[in-house]
Length: 211
Image 1 (cartoon, rainbow, N blue to C red):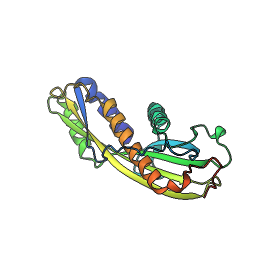
Image 2: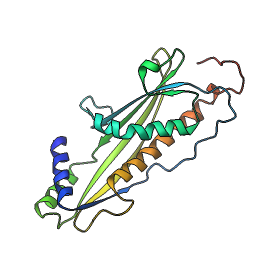
Image 3: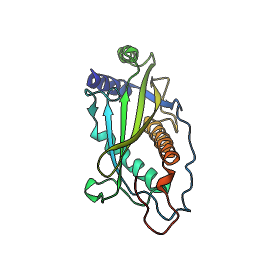
């Protein structure tokens, strides 16, 4: 069913224009500056993207979506200045590193949008269709032994209008909307992580114990 929905939406988009608008459920946050700390946590980031309900065993991994967003994720972590060393390769993980497990679930709010998209396709997009994609993102922290220490999540969504009356608008492309929502969700989780893990930072030159 989900695969059929993707094919159907692709058909609709090919017939007409589309414009995407973020719902901004997660506000843009300002990350704290940790430049005054000599020692910062070193982390390995495990990133997965799924299509399906959050936490469901029936959710499908979407490696294409993961690979498309991974450069944005690397940029967000590297530019945050929150960590001493960041790796996205498990083979580069070193003893004492924390593991941050980031998961994104793309899911639909209901089946109503399927009917609208189908009608729009039959009328060659004379009747505009609205599709809503929801994104639930979670960040779990594990210690060097793989024991879960904490987890947090947030939620946002994107509305995409499809039809001849909604030609692509500058700055309102689906890619721009997904990138914007993704970055806001990541930064919000990172801020929450720092707020709850300030004891893991030290201004001393000597190594600090890892809880």
